[in-house]
Length: 469
Image 1: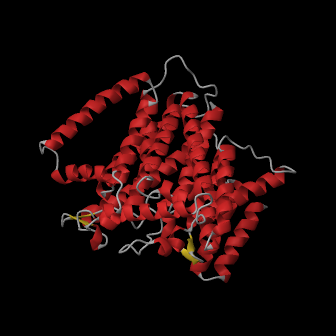
Image 2: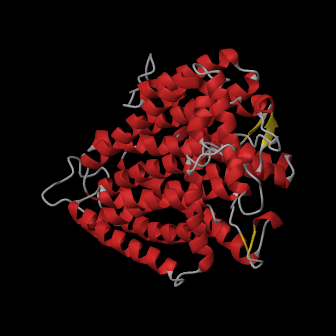
Image 3: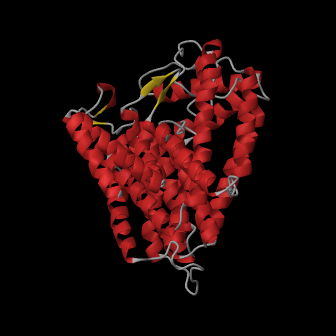
């Protein structure tokens, strides 16, 4: 009967509508039916939408409605609808980070009482609500098989994004401001800027490494309590091959982005991914540390490319704090002074509003009132997320954010200790992701372009591994 109705529907669409409209209608109907049957498909679409969903933004108020927003809304709506159909009340399990998330969201909401632009506050709050929503969804719905599929989609998205950046670098595709050495172009992918692009890659690279090390570093004498969950199966070898391709491509693309903040984040994230898995891994890391010291020595005697050595040497300049009003700006120091000017403005906002800040999402709207001479462009954020949170949500919000992030690290560590084999590798990669994000956020704000959703999915996977193992 259902097959007959479907055939009638297809035939009617082809007869009554133009071919293009009929194809769109039939395809849309099939997608809708698939999503109603398997709501986790919306999660896989959201993972792909993080890097590619900004291609077709729809202007909405002070922001844009993107495919990420649509996918997350669809995912949560389908989940709640299924829960409502099965239960008289919504039976949602609240994982460990639910309370820290709620505390930060509460502090952010309080900060809006002094916000100059409520629209900007709502835009930022929606980002955090989406992150919280996908965290709850993943922790409540994914199992071993779905988790591996989500990992595969994540690695594929990272591989595809890396390929775009490598193409841009080699074939000089991009604005002239991104030109390097007159022959190349800084990789920026679909993120419009090299820094968030490399930051996105830094969130997936440790997970790719974790998948690979999950094969090698396994604690002897331990078995999974549930062998079917996060276990090493034949299909996992395909995941490993994908991880190899993705990791190599993402490391190359991150280097081509010329983003120093990402280099620091990726390096630390990969290091942590290896260290936390076993004593053997820790020993190998010591060997790698000596190798790194040797590389640094080579840079001092010009045996590695001078441009890369100079780029690494410039990282140290960001650790100094100074008053930009007394600095003469030139081409060599412009990037550092520009960032420091925005750090200084954020500190001034925090000093003026120490408890609740100027309102979440309101750094840019109130920036003109605090702008330093010659630095009138707010750039959207303070280029240091910790200062940005302090400026927008005050001490209350900063404390809640640090509590949330501390709890996230604790959850990640518990996931590593509670698992073995592939599960431990993935958990270690997710912990490395937190390290990469935390360090990169010292120099930037990576909660842009839907990256917060990517972070929420990773946090949910860590909670899943902890509970399943």
